[in-house]
Image 1 (cartoon, rainbow, N blue to C red):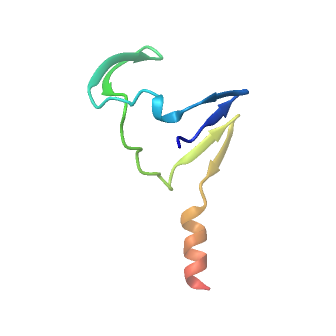
Image 2 (spheres, rainbow, N blue to C red):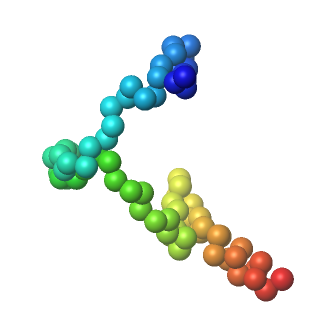
Length: 72
């Protein structure tokens, strides 16, 4: 039996969806041209990155929390 999912009240079978391709395609995003596959592995998370939101800078605290846990 196939798993049925619902989106906004409409049932659908996820097995019938198109699979993303490994073949590179040319596309543009915000004025920049790319040639890349539509299916790709996610990039590893950067825990040192500064996040900027509405003029405020936030620092990811995952590495800091890991250090504190190791010391305890």
